[in-house]
Image (cartoon, rainbow, N blue to C red):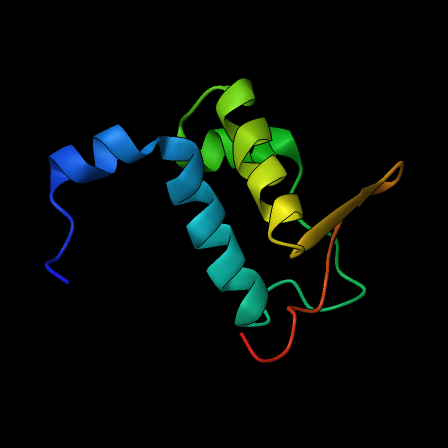
Length: 83
């Protein structure tokens, strides 16, 4: 598969790029238990995007079963095995 161009990335959606990066960090153990996942505000600042964009990215992580949210904040989930 050829590498993604800037145009490919732009049409793909920033929220997916955010989900990919944060998902990679979860799998790499950056957010090891019991350490909490960064707040929405921290992610907004880090990626310089709007809150709705971050919320879509976080939603994608939940859909991928890499993140679950609780009233006390977001926590990473152990990635599913075998895939």
